[in-house]
Length: 168
Image (cartoon, rainbow, N blue to C red; front, side):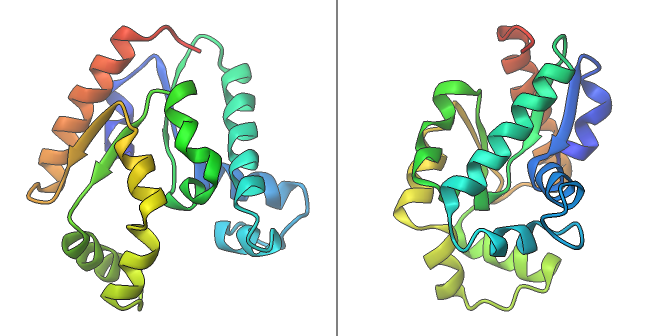
């Protein structure tokens, strides 16, 4: 969704944190190919280190683009760290949500994800993640929305947040 919104916000940098961190880890020779999953494996389940790597990339991008707003797709894996519950204190957070059934259906269709519904919900809808999602400044329920409808609402919500927030 955010990729389609890139042209709407000319005073912004839009990117995805998974890609940023995977590229950084690859460039630091920490992994042999750009893969966020491979980088996570090298951390042996240390979710705080994983989130810290993401936060460091955000700060680098903010310092490199001080006059720009940052609009970042933060992958769900970063939200596993206990300290992720405080992301909303430092950043304007928009959560894109859907019912577990719809989210599972979408993810299995899009990514060849073979987890059962129970495995999926145990991971993606655990109490900690639900608390992180609930802490967002704005939430968009995409359950009954097309991608076009979600994009329209996302653009409106992000546009409102950007008009209320000074760049970096």
